[in-house]
Each structure stands twice: as structure tokens, then as C-alpha cells.
Amino acid sequence: MTWNKSYSFAQLDCEPYNFILNQSQIAKIILFDQSSLVKTKNEMVFLYKPEGSEFLPVMDLFNYWDQNKNQISDNQCIFSMTIQDPKKQLLFKRVIKILYKIDISIPNAGILAPSHFSFVDIKLDDIKLLPGLVKNRLERRGLLGLVMNEQNILYWIDLEKMAYFFLKDMMR
Amino acid sequence: MNNSELLQTIENKEATGLQNISSVSSEDSLKFVIFSMKEKLYSLPAEMVLEIFLTDNIFYIPFCPLYVSGFINRYGEPYTVIDLLALLENEKQNTRKFIILRRKESQIAFMVEDVIDILSFPKNKILWMSPKESEGGFFSGVIQDPSNDIFILQLDKILQRLENDME
Image (cartoon, rainbow over all chains, first blue to last red; front, side, top):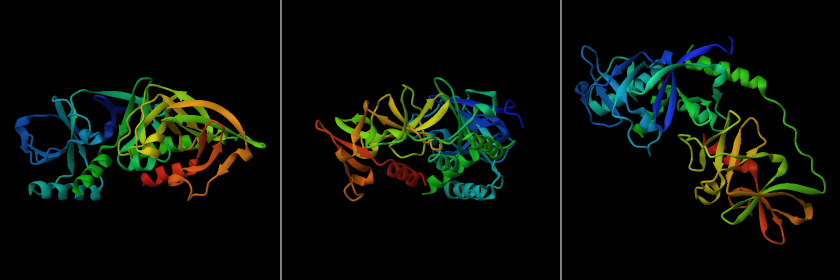
């Protein structure tokens, strides 16, 4: 492996935060359509049913990141991912069952995201790991590393890990 | 390459880059970095301090206790900022002065109001405290200075607190 090799990330601008997501974690990007919203019992987890597709549980994950911040932009899309870990799949199904009395069979989940995103190539050399003492907790919760720029930083997040803790916190 | 593989690759590289850190030797007197917060004076043994760093930019960290203020960017490396006033008195500061600790593996910075001086004090001017005498165990002693008492921070206890809170 060479350190100069670049990997493709999706960069999301959710003012005042900027995130990068490993592109391999994103299955597809769906443009948000209000008419496909099935129910909105809960503002943080809701069900979405695009035409011809199964129910997709969607989380408002970026508002969980900083709960003191106002809602993200109205121009939103949904980043769909496949939940790999069976334990996380199970928790997801349980939450949907409790909230909506619906059984979901698919391991896919969506993340509500702003429409301001682009795909960027980032070298591993440019990614900094989190400092010790805060590293373990933040990694478990899905913050894996940082790209340090002069005036801002990019937070490298793992959607699946963050979604898991988001749901666990919700269930408390 | 998935996230776990990327993370492991970066970790392996950083582990090989860690260097041993030399310490400052002491004699009959001990040298301290003196700083202030809310009109009180505090100190850290000088050998524990790498530098005083100034920056306006502090970046948010989620899922942390109140006294963890964020990250600062020190020459391209992230340092976790502990707001000492928030830890000691539950009151947040908003300053641009940071004491960078000489602990490469944990990359910690203390947010302080002002850095006053770097001074040596004879050992007989220092009153060492037992853990019971120290509020929350965060102080190891007091420098009895004619103008003001200066509390000596117990660094290990502070970092232990952070470690426990981040479990």
C-alpha cells in the first residue's frame, strides 16, 4: 500500500460541520421526496417508501451529532447503506417494530443528508487518527478520524457505527 | 477497502512513528509553568509542558463531557482540549490560550485564561497535599508564594478522570 494512494469519499457540508464518508459504505443516493414519506411518528427515525421499493428506515443522524444545532438544510437527500453487522440489523428492526409496528426484512437503512455533497479523493496520509483518551469512545460511536485543514476540519464518520449508537441512545 | 481496513492501516503507520520523549531534569528547586483562571493561580511542573499554543479555532467534539471543549489543530495534528475551569468549577471558558502537554500518545491541551510565567521555586516552598486534602484529587500541592498561593495540578488524576468519563 502506498500512502499517496487516494480513496474516494463523499464530502458532506452540514454547516458548520463537514463530514467525509467512505464511498464504499454508500449503496445509493436517493433524492428526498416528501410524498414518499410513510409516517412521521418520530422526527429522528422515519420510514420512507420510494416508488417500487421496500420500506427504508431513515435516520436524521446529523442532528444527533450536535443536538444543540438547528435542523440541517431543507434540500435533503438520503444516503442509503447496507447494514452489515447482524447485531446492528437486529436493533434496527426492533426500533422500527416498536415505533411503527412494521416488520422490515431488508438490511438497508438511510441517512438523511443535505444535498450539498461532492465526491473527493483523500490520501490516507491526510487522515489523522483521534488522540488517545477520546479515541476509543468516539470510534465506537462512529467518528474514526479527521482531516485537519487550516480553517476547518473534516470529520470521517462511519455511518453504521454512528447509527447503532444513535438507536441505542434512542431506546434508553 | 472498508473503514476498518483503512483505520487499521493508518494505526499501523502511526504506531511506528511514535518517539520517546525526554524529560526536563530537576535540581534543588522545581520549575513550574504558572497560569491563571478566574483570578486564581495554578501551575504545572515545567517538564510536563511542551509549549504554549495560541489559536482562535477550536473544533467541536461530539459525545464528550462538558469540560472537553473540542480539538485544536497544532501543526496539522488534532489535540483534545480540556477546559480546566469547566473541570474544576463547572464553568466554561472562551479563551485562545492552550498549554500543550508533553504526552505525545494522548495529545492533550489545557485551555487556560492566561499564562503568567515560568518560574523555579525552592522545594521547601512547596506544600504537598494528600489526596484527601486535594479537592477532587486534582491538586498535588501548593506553592507558597508571598503574593499568592499557586495550586499545582495533579496531571495523572485529571487524565484519569477523562479516561473514566470516556469509558
